[in-house]
Image (tube, rainbow, N blue to C red; front, side, top):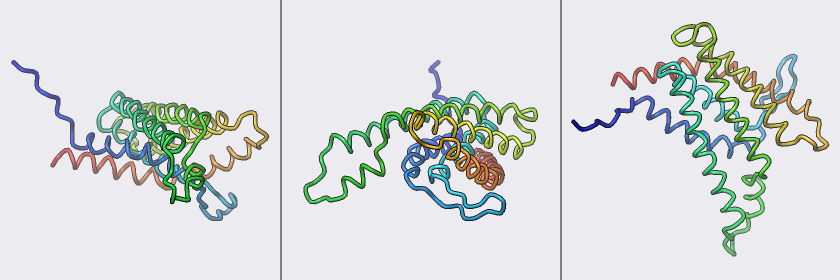
Length: 217
């Protein structure tokens, strides 16, 4: 009897494609600092724009954990390293190796916006892997895990993983330089916690419902 090829659930296939694309997009979007406006008691908040894509990574990995279990969600996080590393290599090659056309005048701006040093690339990989793995673990364990207190688990796991992500990335990227790391971390953490509170609860419900609907079709 021939071995049958495993059938991938439609939701898992769709979420995996979206997850891989967002891994790449998060790094590209991170070159812009976005204003979140003025908030009572918190003041003016600003955050690197990559957080919008990164929070969707949190939401998707949590939805996969809810639908298919912690092990599958951890595999998704590990596979996310592939598009992340490939995009870093390709950007480095295009910026540093491939010469610009003689009539193209935007090479310096292109390199400044999309080119990251080795230290920041390493920081991005470490913070991504650690925070996403932590998010999946906490989401799968808080309040009894799968099938219980969905919104609470997603919210708390997102908050804690965002703190870890920020501390790791800023510390690895800028430690030893004459920069106020504590102040930078504080502003980024507050901004990310605000966005996590606004985005994660409704979107985790939406993605879990979407996943179930895709698999019923």
